[in-house]
Length: 312
Length: 236
Image (tube, rainbow over all chains, first blue to last red; front, top):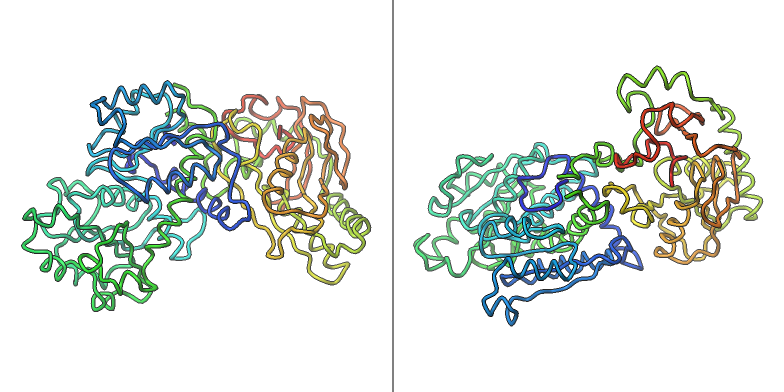
């Protein structure tokens, strides 16, 4: 494993499986009377969130606390960043406070990468612009592996994963494509042409524009969020039309193979990309994904911080 | 990038270094002929069987029928030992005996001396450990640090009535005030030696070997490869 987790594309298959297998063991901690391990006692994890986030920040906070690390939440609103401090100065401040890991979410793609060059501790990317969100991809892979009854050491070979929606702006889609491909899954993207990135040909996945054709060939359907600000930005004619063509409703759910599952990284727009009855169906893994997120982030924090300090 | 270089520590699906087999091929071909020459067999398969049978009877006797006993093996090789002891006790008492495994990696006191390693399985029987007599089972008792970690781990799982310790080999050199309740063999060793326990479940054969540290492939404190090399006797 690298010292940092910036991109899912950096993870080898072996690294990814080590994280998933570790998460599998750590998931059992949630069932114990004392949901805490002493492993990161005395280590400090800083949550540095330049963008709003509830579930990711809380998930990282819960994960760090279950490993007995000290957690500092650095909310950008009301901080010195709001007064115009640069990312580098913020980083140096955190460094001076003795942080061992920085979990960073930033609106600019590449910000965690820059940060990694300035701080001595580990940097964990919790979402940067439209670039990557590696822990989300890891928890999605973990959820898929569990749902399909595969255990420790097993990858996702042969599973067909279809990712639907706003791929262009989605860091979740990019991280998932790389990670799921690395783990042996066949990944297909389905989106309107306006919501696909230009360099999509370089991605290790198939691309199509027709959801109805893709569904019967999918073991996993991952619905991406359509962000409010995109809805009126002429990527598609109207929200209703998008929902008709690319939304997952009950009729489309029936086209899926019997054992197929439906995923969503949250937060959902019920009635836009996913119908409420689909989101609440037993096929949906949305609540599981949140619980699995804590286990996977524990595994990442443990593997990056739990051992010998990396040689600089 | 430094952490990329722990080949043994990061094997997925094997429980990391704890499962690293000491057997042939572990360190490449050159050292294999040496290894054949050096190790001394301390316990053979039949002696291991006999020792386990004796320990099983001692557990029954000491716990008055093993009514409230749970056996927890410490990965890697404590787990099959616990299963074997449970089978023997079950045979004698004519009822199943709960057994499982207890991984202690997250409780170790030397985590920061080596790269992070993969975790072994922790499987506690459904009836839990509250109010039970927990017998921890491990292959080699050396410094006592593994057992200390196991006691901490147990503490987070519940409150046993009592905790006892069964080991196949006690090789001495304790660094903590810990002793075993059941011992397969007391083996006086030098700290320069390595005790290797091989079990059919993990290594294809049953044997306990004693070998000089130089006789294998790497220096004893070279430790950043993360491997205890299956040499559970090197567990520090």
